[in-house]
Amino acid sequence: MPNRTAFALSIATLALACGACSPPEQPPELPPEPQATQLRDAMQAPLEKARAVEDAVREADERRRAQLDAEE
Image (cartoon, rainbow, N blue to C red; front, side, top):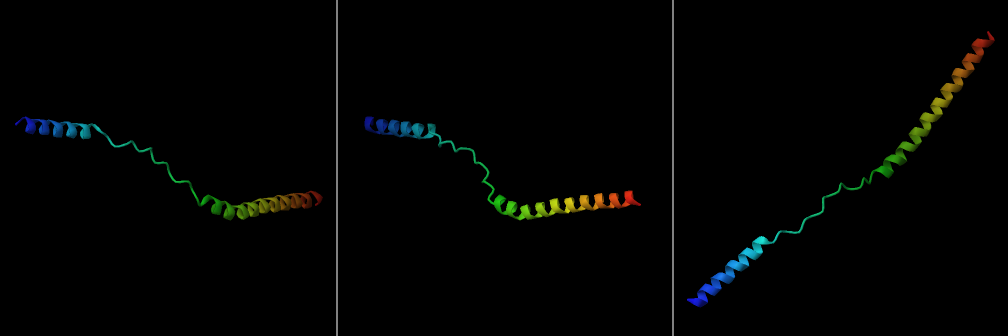
């Protein structure tokens, strides 16, 4: 009987020890780095340049029209 009690006590101790352990904490998952930004920037750069040129052409046209109106 004493052997059986020691065995049961060791099993209970082992179960408590395993139950007290907790899994390691996982670091919070960070969102993945955006990988499409370089492609998007490469596509947007010519469009932005074209918009800037268009604005410059419009301003030049407005100045030219204002000059023509002032000469009349």
